[in-house]
Image 1 (cartoon, rainbow, N blue to C red):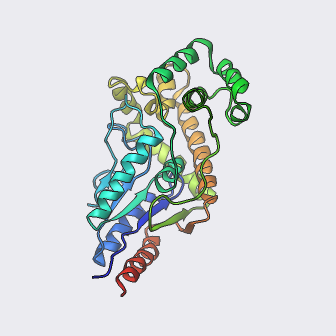
Image 2 (image 1 turned 135 degrees about the horizontal axis):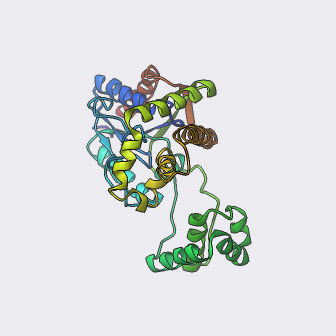
Image 3 (image 1 turned 30 degrees about the horizontal axis):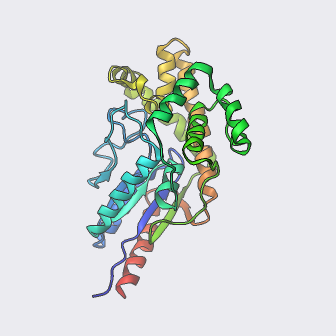
Length: 315
């Protein structure tokens, strides 16, 4: 009996490019041809329970009956590091492949997709060292720690902004534990077998309009009430969840730092900047095949995936 290849299919694209709809359409298209597929979330904010409106988390109806992994698995007080997410996603991918199911990796967190698919090794961490450095960060501030970093690792310090306390603390922690820190990311080298990547192409004008419409819809759907409820569940204590786009701006609104109009506009502006950053990252990956965004592109993707599976079967 010939060996059957179960490829990993990655759907890339910036925020509001329609990845969820395409992933679901692709799963259905593959299913119609006898190939089962499930979605593995690669968006760092969809892991949080209760963060639904501001993350544009797909509803059960939008998931179209397709199983989705790594959604609603953490409380807002927890922190999902890239290393943690890598391990969780790779386990979900391995589970799918063991069952003969094609995993569809979908999400806008470019760093997370890179870490999941590629040869991406994370240095260890030490809670005691991290806690001590975070205490110093709170006491003396990021610029002072950045000066310390520059004195022990000038090249590393050059690649980190003086105000980025989290990255400065992480760099100092790794240097203390290992003696060095590499601020550059690994190259494009798959750690998983049989990966095929697609990108969803959307014009800047269309993307900008979609983002503005999405933010308006979030406010209309009750984003402010959602944040107020999550504050009662510890949102402010969550180092990662509280910094999410939309949530950070609503917290500023609640604290009187922004008006509602300013918070809404800041969310639109921040999301547009983030989408450009995402797209720039994805564009640097030469392994991605770009297709026009929309459910209709699922047919082209399904054809490619069927070709891989059929080729392995000798069909």
